[in-house]
Length: 496
Image (cartoon, rainbow, N blue to C red; front, side, top):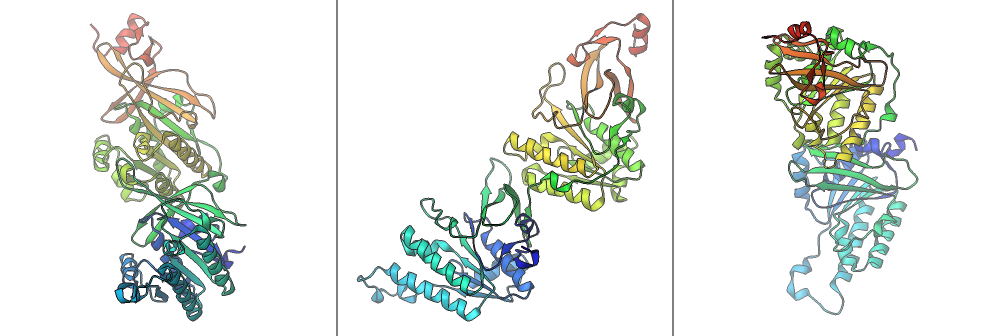
């Protein structure tokens, strides 16, 4: 079906998931618990229709027109162009003298509700209709069979009137009832999750869409001023591009020699090490080298305060703040407690796509993991994000802080198999001092040194020395010296 033949929601991410929107003249179910955003989604659907010159009708059984207008105003919307029909219970419900016992009052109310609804459709002749909500009809129907027949009758009536209908269901039934799933042309489910700490998370899923292709799985979304912002699940295969492979230098010759001449463009590099070993500084070396080549870079910082990062690197002669102000570096402080993984992936994509960024740093995955409810989900999200960035020709650097300081290290999340290159940083003790060692344990795209080099962090940044051939057991934290007396004089800054 051509996109122009579909009824779009006007919500960019949701329309992408639905491949353009809803097939016209069909009945759809939008379900979710109270507070998941059903009314906001429905209003955006009608507002998009009004923007396109289509007639729109909102039939409300649970909210007043004033409440809908107030909700719209909170997003900066005007409901001009949308007809609001309040389907209210008859006044006799409040008059004790009008009560009777010959018939069930629900029988009378259901018939009256259907009559008023049909009369409103006949009068407005809308192209788009929202019915809010089905819980009222379900309660009046009493039984699942009667409820199903009532909705089927409405479905056929809407079809004869060429209307695209979205019916809302707040899932208030005491027992799970999927009666409408078989009737609706498509079912969209909104969910709200409450993590142990941090803001609530919202996600949606297309449960079914008859005869149409769509992007399956869960998709994160938020409700902000201006309506829903939906972040479609990233599928890296949909974004493959071509680019020339080349080796990228860091600006530190010894580091380039260690990684076999340079890091390949369009690859991912994982920098592992305990806290304080300089993982961020190694990634910053590649950021500065990219800027020196005339490229743009991006950094997403989870753990360190941005101003502290600026001050710390400025003392080494690195003007990250100046690069940011000149538009060469895009740097963002990320609050893991307030961000869903889908929203984070969307942020990275937008920065890379809009600004043609070719070097990206995520510092660190420990902070990113805090935004994830399950470790398996983290690996899957990171896999798609890395593949996407690689296929855009962007070189990605990720840092992971290992637990411990010396000796055996443990990694909170193992994604070494995802990265193309793995750089390992270590502390070791020698001559009564804590020293640092760097090595490359994996590189898919070519050869690399199998040596372990000492490196130092000083007022000028990162300096990498010669291979530590004179030591054994450096990675264990307590090496044994096996060199000569001349080696001892060269390596020990304070020999006896």
